[in-house]
Length: 69
Image 1: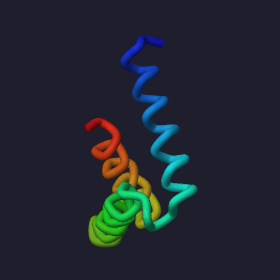
Image 2 (image 1 turned 60 degrees about the vertical axis):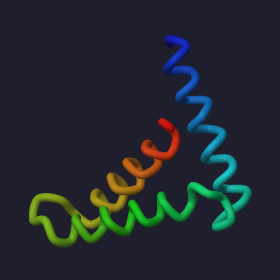
Image 3 (image 1 turned 90 degrees about the vertical axis):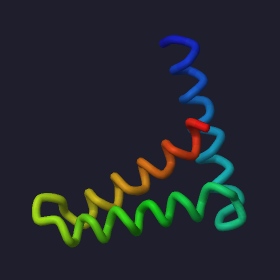
Image 4 (image 1 turned 180 degrees about the vertical axis):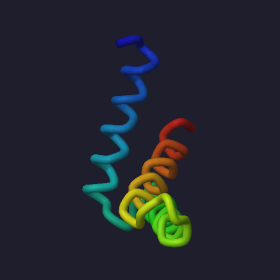
């Protein structure tokens, strides 16, 4: 694994750990939940995407946007 990939993994671990400890007080929690909600709505509206898949994709995208900064 390259240094850049390892840094990304460490950032993700740190962010998830912080979100788990701080709950709604962590700065990443609300944007990730908002992304999950948007993804769930998209999953409900689009015929090919299911609600759970949309929720996971939305949360994953929002989480990625938070840690890549």
